[in-house]
Amino acid sequence: MRNVLTQPTPFDVHVRGTVFLDIVLTGLDSEPRLGTEVWTSGMGSCPGGIANMAVAAARLGLSTSLSAAFSTDAYGQFCWQTLGEQEGVDLSTSYRVDGWHSPVTVSLAYGGDRAMVTHEHPAPVPEPEDVPAARSCLVHLAAVAQPWVVRAQAQGSMVFADVGWDSSTQWNPDLLAGLEHCHAFLPNHVEAMRYTRTGSADEALEALAQRVPVAVVTRGAEGAVAVDSVAGERAEVPGLRLDALDATGAGDVFGAGFLTATLSGWPLTERLSFANLCAGLSVQQFGGSLSAPGWGDIADWWTHLRLGPRTSATAQLVRQYGFLDDVLKEHPSASGTAVRRASATLAVRNDLPTGGTPAR
Image (tube, rainbow, N blue to C red; front, side, top):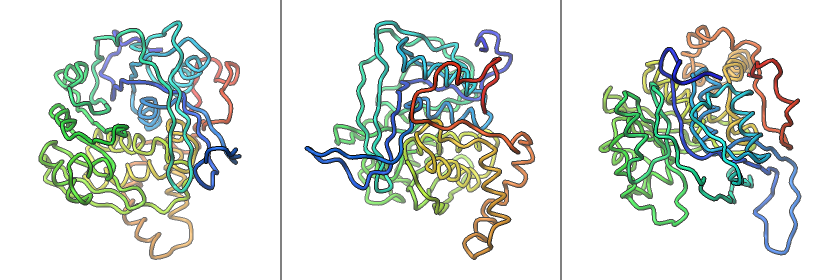
């Protein structure tokens, strides 16, 4: 693994937070009820939490640094090996913790969405103060600015933030004070409306655009809207009609796609379309992190779209995503490149790549 101290150039992205073991169950007809047993048709296990962002960014070719605590238990070992050895994420600012069990989330997918049950104890050791040089960072928003985020911004990182579910259901708007240090904010429409006390995604977007240079509101199957106040651009893209297996981590994958396109300097409409595609492809697979598409997945989708039956809908998509012709030329490794997906059981050591070559 790389050593941050000898990294010749800044990372493309640094992420920091909690890594969970995600166990995803799909194929439920409805939510479980007390006193009943429900059988599911699908299951996948993979690193989750902040790992969703790290893997999604790494699979799009960004040099990615992750700082997180990992237990030395079997779950933590699986997450450490999957991220470091399989996905090529730099873990040199991460640390191992004895006597602490890994945080675990069970995700139940049904009806096009999911419900989650989580068990977590905070890591018993403080996070490291050092922040590696990076062009950008992906964060979960907090009302009080996290010291590492302030340091990252001072070092020149563009800060991209999203926000998680508020279990208190209070949706305290004071949380938005954390946008002071952010370049972009990418909540879903429910989060955006509740934090801004507005009645629509468009109204929420306008309110957020007053607080952060780039505001994006995702709307699930209805697409996304965004305002880039720096470039003076506003964009809206429709949702992609793809069969959804599991929506876990789709927002994180969207964020990584939007960040990748931003670092490449694309216009806002293309950034939004690309992020929407990445999220759309991810919901066709199990889990959050290992559902993230690589360039091979994107190339396959584009090829099938262009060569498949032509309808008015596909013709519109071909026009919308025409920029992929040039983008994919910049990623010649996309052809034939496969990524590993979540499996029902945890990988064992000899199931991981040998010789230090990640399975990408």
